[in-house]
Image (tube, rainbow over all chains, first blue to last red; front, side):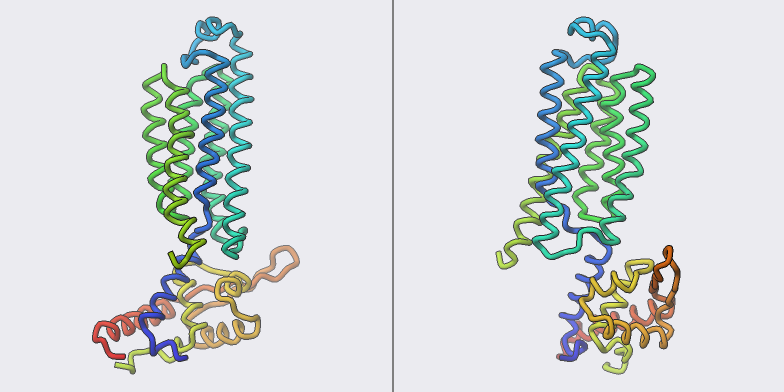
Length: 216
Length: 97
């Protein structure tokens, strides 16, 4: 079969190859949904334990019956557990989707996605730890949203476009959260919980289901 | 009309190689093999043909002790490929099959 006899088919193959070679398309919507659920649980635990969304001064810690140090340790531990579980589930569902589709998992495009995610994320992580060290607890909530949003925005160049919109949403929420200091936890739960679930569901119905049923 | 089609891109494999090198700065032999689903020998033959045309450049490096060969499209290669795509497009527009 001479390819130049079927120009339309050839063009479609070229477009497919260009996409596949430059973008990591195995990102699973379920990764987003599971990360969102983990974040909601983490935020609920924090709210139940601290019984306040006002995390920015000594007084609020005392009101909840904590010393400031206890409050910080609790928030750090809770955050770390959420982070590890969310990343774990995220990797699990994406690896599963790639395997199902017979696509390689660790290739040049997935490496680019990971590196472009990690640079803003690690920067944000160190920034938040520094704020903790200085005793400015509340800034971590808006800061994690902002740095995570920038990380998504950065990585979206090498994967599905939806990540770009999620990234922008997280950055905007984080900026709002900087001014609404009494609602840090609530906004954080919305950004990491609700938005992840919404975008994860959109991606799941848009890509995951169609890829497993190509005829549909 | 057919004279605008570039002979160098007649095979599917060569079209594929140029397609992925248009959107990636450079790719290793193994990434190309994985993307295009070709055997070592087949891929090597097509790569050599495109290199002889001056459409791609080969860079041999060592990563530790392992040799790592990467391929990149030259400006001439990108131009030739674009011309070929334009010819394909024109061919479709006129509806001649």
